[in-house]
Length: 121
Image (cartoon, rainbow, N blue to C red):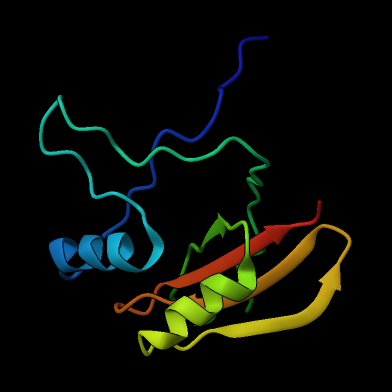
């Protein structure tokens, strides 16, 4: 069976796409969408990716109106949290250390939920 090899993009609506793209680049290092074929898009490191539909009534993402959440892998969750908090961004650390790693949650300026994941080694 032929299968997909990874996620080629994440696309979503935004009230101010340009400002939001700049926020993701500044705070999380996600390059903005290329404006020409000579620019490179954000290149992610290979690693585990979870693709999981949730029940429609989940509260895991936050408000019921939020139908998606993005999860970014990080190498050092503590450093990432410190970096974000130094910029005035509220981050909530899940104190549980799970067999698959550690997690923290935050929201972008438009209220979209973001989860950070430091996979277990």
